[in-house]
Image (cartoon, rainbow, N blue to C red; front, side, top):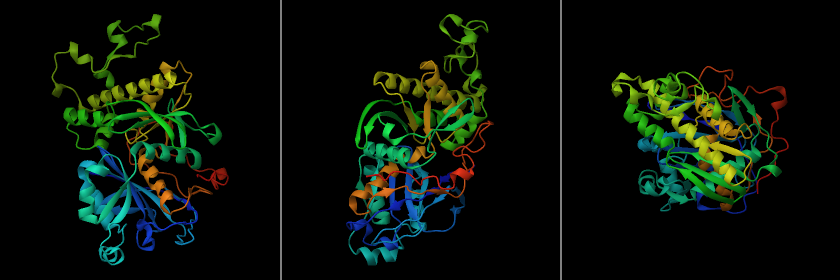
Length: 427
């Protein structure tokens, strides 16, 4: 398996009038504007490109591309048919991100940067804790100075943008069936945004720029990756996720049926297959770690974390009277088993009254919000207007054998040829 898969997806944005010139865009014709979200586990990168190609190779690693293109224009900086790309790197391999930015010449060639900027550093929008931790590294290696944006501000701005402006963005996943949900922007708020990164933040969103982090948990994607690495020796998140796809959690988890001799506990509504204790079965077995299959351990761990996040999210939605729960963050990876487990948890605890919702671009909320913050510095209003799908997404993520063949988006129908014709302008 490749050490790193860069998830590179594209869709276009229409730019409004440029009312001001910031240092970031004094040399706009020579660089590809970008924003970066550096988390504890992963780095997410969003950048413009004028490249006509819809597939690329970097350092021998294939980059999967979703290509959705619209015309774009700025009065000062016309950019016909530009595309917005998304790429991901592991934070522990941050030099791969640096090499990617350099090799793609996203900041222009090194000589051109020196000629254009003189002694000035190039300002790049950045968010996440790593924007502080790795600021010196990026300045030293690339001549970049991070213009830092608040992490929560960016998460909410990115989620609101996607939910308002990008068609077929939100969907539910129940019993192996994906169903896209069209949300009326006038009825979007309030909602609970559950962002699953290294840890989990649960944010009550009341409007654009109006939100409160109401809860969270330290048991998140970093927990899955960290414990999984210790228990299975997997070297990457994707390897661990793929391994879980092959496992059977019932070998590891103690079920209700294990306690009740194969029977349900019908009085309180627990089926024999319900998990009574995650990782509970080894208690009664005279086995060591090496006696268990790594794939079964990975499956049980994924189920443990997904179940708990779904339950905590629903309880917070009840506490704050929120009818809509939207899950984002790179932990999900559009992985069917993860989405199914979260959905089942929400459905179980709500007794069928609530459904979990997911996002196609779930892992890039912070980076997209940081990119969108260029609006405040001379890029005008970012809009998604008259989006046209060119091809469906092809996901590098492991998938279970289900009825849904394409993990992010169904094959476009005739009615999808002009999906965003009536989309609102974001202010």
